[in-house]
Length: 621
Image (cartoon, rainbow, N blue to C red; front, side, top):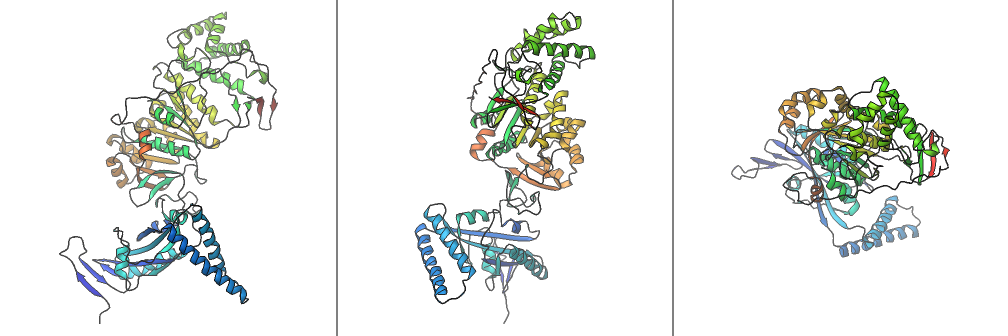
C-alpha cells in the first residue's frame, strides 16, 4: 500500500498543478514543503523575539493564529489551574518530596498573570504558532528542516512536525486565516505583543551581540519582507548620528524628515530646524514648539548677545572666553553684512570698535558684567562714526542700511524670542534675499550655541531642509561641515535633506557632509543625477533601477554595508501635520505668537564662581 496519495487539480484555477501528500511533507508542484507546530515556549521573551525566524536566509513561512479568550472564561481557567498547582505543591510537601522547580515557576507565573488580569492590565489569548519550510528537492528539504529546528531550539521553541497532518500544517501557514492544526497555547497581552517581529531583516542592530529588538524610529515597511524598518541613529554602535536624505523634487524628502522628527520627539530628542520654505510651522505649532520667523515684523536678533546658558537647577553659566569668542563672531557677522572678507585694516578698526561698544554698555572683561543688556548694531555704528579714522567712518556708512535703512528691522532692538524648547523652528522664508546670508549665520550661531551648551547635555537633532540653499553660502557651508564633524561629540545628529544632489556632491564640503553621515537615505532620483549617485554610493544595477522608478515615499536606507528598500509610513494624524500637498492643506494658517524679552537697565553684578570644567557660574537666573 503506498504511503502517499496524489491529487491532480489542473482544472481548478487557484490550486497547484499537483499535490503529493506524504507523512511529514507535501510536494506542491515542484516544491517540497514541511510544516511544524510549536508546542513549547520559553518562560520569558523580549520584544521581537520571533524576528530570527524571519531573518533566516532560507524560505520559511511563519503563521501566528490569535483568538481572544473571554475574561470570565480566562479567570475561571486560571482558578482551576492555580488549584491544581497548589494541590500538587501541598501533596509534595506532605509526602516530604523535593519541590519541582518547573511547578514552582508555573505557580508564580499563574499568580502574577491572575493579578494582572484582575487589575485589567492585560487579557488572555489562545495562540497557535506554525512554521512551513520550503525547498526545491527532498534532500534540500531535509537539510532546511534540520537547520530551522535548530534555530527554533536556540529560541527555546519546541517545533514538532505535523506528522500525518502535513496538508493541514501547510494550509495553516497560508495567508487564509485557517488553523487546521488547532495546537494553541495561552498568551497574555505582553507576551503576544512581544511575538510580533517588528524588525527589518536587512538592518540588524549595530551591536551584533545584542538581541534583534525593534528600537529607534519607525521609517516604514520593508518592500522586500513582511517586516517594518526601524532605525536608531543614537544606537551605541553607530559611528555618528548624522543622516542625509537625497531625492528629486516631490520624492517625499521633507515628508520623511518630518515624520522622523515627530517620532523622535516622542523619544525625548530635542530638535532644531532650519526651515527655508516655511514647511514646519504647522508641525511646530501642533507639538507646542517655538517658531522664530526671521524677517517677520517685530522679530529681532541681536548678534552682540553673549551665550549665557541656564542649567536645569536654574543657575546660569558662561564660558571663560565668551566675550572674546563673541567678538570674533562679530567679525564674521560684519563680513557677511558688508559682502566681502575683511582686510587687515578693517579687522583692526572693527576689533577696536567692538571692544569700545561693549565697554560703553558696561560689559568688560569682568564676567560679572556679562549678564548686563548687550549693545546693539546701532551702538557699533555710532562708535565707528565717532572715530577719527576715515576707514571707520566708511564702515559706519556701509552699516547704515542695517541700522536706519530698509534692512534695520532685524537688528533694531534686543533679541525677541529665545530659541528654547523641545522643537525650535527657524523660518527664513520672510527674509529678503539681501538678509538671507546674515539671517542664516545668526540662526546657525543660535543652534550651535545650544548644541554645545555643556550645562544641558541631551540627544538632539539639527534638521537642515533644502540643504542646497545653505551650501550656496560660504558661511553656511562651513557651518554644515563643522557640525557634521563635531556633532557626535555633543550628542547631536545632523539631518540634511536636499533635492539638488549634484550641487551638494559637486563641492568638497558637500561631499564631506555626506561622507560623515552614518545613515544615508536615497529617494527617487532624476536620470541626470543617477550616474553621480551610483558612483558615490556604489549602487548595484538593481538599486539604480529602483531609485529611478521608485514611487512617492519609497527609498533606500543605507547604514554601512546594510541596505533596505522601504516605503515611508505615517498615521492619519501624522500625515495631517507633515504633508505639504497644497490640495490637502486648508486655507487657514496657524500664527505662533512671538514673545518679547524684558531687559533691565543696569543689573547688579551677580555672584560668580568658576567650576572645575572652566565654566563661570553666574548664579540663579
